[in-house]
Amino acid sequence: MEQINFKIVIEYDGTNFAGWQIQKKGVTVQAELERAISIILNQPIKLIGSGRTDAGVHAMGQVANFHAYTAISSENLLKALNSIIKTPIVIHSCDVVQLNFHARYSATSKEYHYHILNRQIPCAVGRDYVWQVRQELDVDAMRCCSKVLIGKHDFKSFEASGSPRSHTVREIFCASIESVENNGGRRVIFKIKGDGFLRFMVRNIVGTLVMAGLSKITPDDFKAILEAKDRAFAGATAPAKGLFLMRVNYD
Image (cartoon, rainbow, N blue to C red; front, side, top):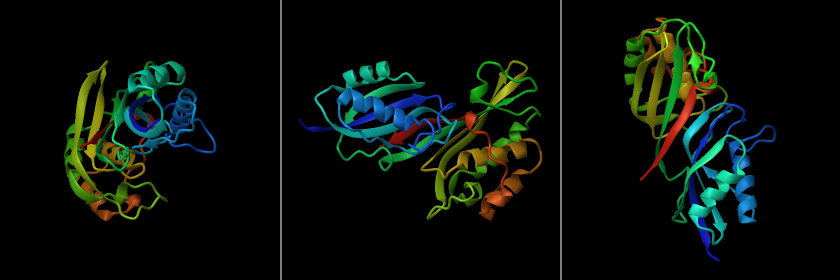
């Protein structure tokens, strides 16, 4: 029986998960999937994810791969996985890929969306998927700030405190703000695509963009914050529940 490398694309509601990666405490997406796949294939399985998502963060297109010795087809594995998983996880696709495919190291870019509900009245349905900001946001100011992010920069100002990387330079291919009318208010969606992201980077950027939207800083201030390479100058970390990993791209 030959070894197969499977690539899966995963959607999950992160509300009640302690994040993607297996931890000593808390239910994680990786642990739930490894348990299900191991049961189906009757062998221990180790998932390789494209990257971590933190507690409360959602995904529409997380990617993982795993190696297994099996004769099962990818189609039947997909059906079996979606039938056995009872937590809010859905596998969108399952494909056989080359043995050297690596969900993390083969990725060329990732795209995240962050949803803000900008109105006075909270929502009853979907409150676990938005950050409510009651004061009216200046979306044009936020758009001006988002343009500053495009290109290759040192994003140390937006890195989580206490989690230094060997280098904090990342390239952002596109960053934009959409505004959609929403029942007496609006939904503001920040979209960003880059070659990689630091821990809490998107949420720290959003927290700082909201400062601009509330006229607490100007676009020039936002640029100065980016160039300062100091987390102390950026805004508060936006709540996890508004963040979605939308897709991971590969050549």
